[in-house]
Amino acid sequence: MKKNFAGKAKNKTFLGMFALMSATSVLLNSCNFKNEVNEKVNSQEHPTAEMVPRIDDENVDPDKRVIYLTFDDGPNQGTENLLRILNKRNVCATAFLVGKHTYGSKRQKDDFQLLKQSPLVELANHSFSHAHNKYTDFYKNAEAVVHDFDVAKDSLKLSDKIARTPGRNIWRLNNINVTDIKSSTAAANGLKNAGYKVIGWDLEWRPTHKMTLKGSHEAMLKKVDSIFLNDLEKTSRHLVFLTHDQYLRDTDSINELDLFIEKLQKSNKFVFRKISQYPKINEVLN
Image 1: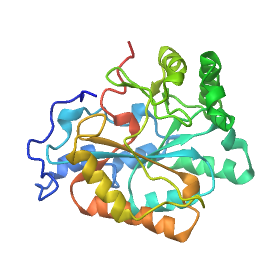
Image 2: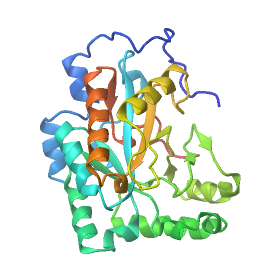
Image 3: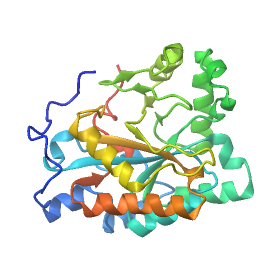
């Protein structure tokens, strides 16, 4: 697929030494800091697209790459562990929530409130039913899919229409149109026509059969480097990372994700953003 930004680094060995970002650039563009912006956001019900600066590709330091940490299916087992990691590393992320999970149990209700209250977390739509885990049937009815997302938007009180489809890596933005399983095309187009900005992912940290994170943080760091080096991200210099709250229930998985984020931060090669800051996401869909 043709890339959407021509600004690829000519030097494919960009993973070497990088110039330090200026202090001003860090404050404007990075989420992993504490300042007046976070304090103001913390006073709101939850962060929304309107509360983060709209930043296009040209505002990214040419020696940096942008990581969007996203977590699906919350609130769920592992949500509190995820929040502990984000708070420890002071890094932002986007939680794609399932509407019915916010009412599934008292703990899920409480975790939903914690997510809403965190200035580091942005909330987005991952459907109400999660397709009842019957994806093929779910995507056969485009109108029902749109209705399911509308119910989730209303129940979660989301102010924006940023969405991710359950069980599918689908993109519907003005500049990106990707459907991984073609039988889902009508439903994906229905979401776009309803005003939803559908975001998939570039890299997923998958689970073991025990539903824990599979592999090491070192392996995932190599995959991040490989994606940027080989121009595999959907938008130049921007990588959307996905994993799931429920994979963060055991000590090893928690530690691996923590180390993954820590080493990304310490490398000085990356900045972190919420998904509402993804290039062109806030443009009106055609």
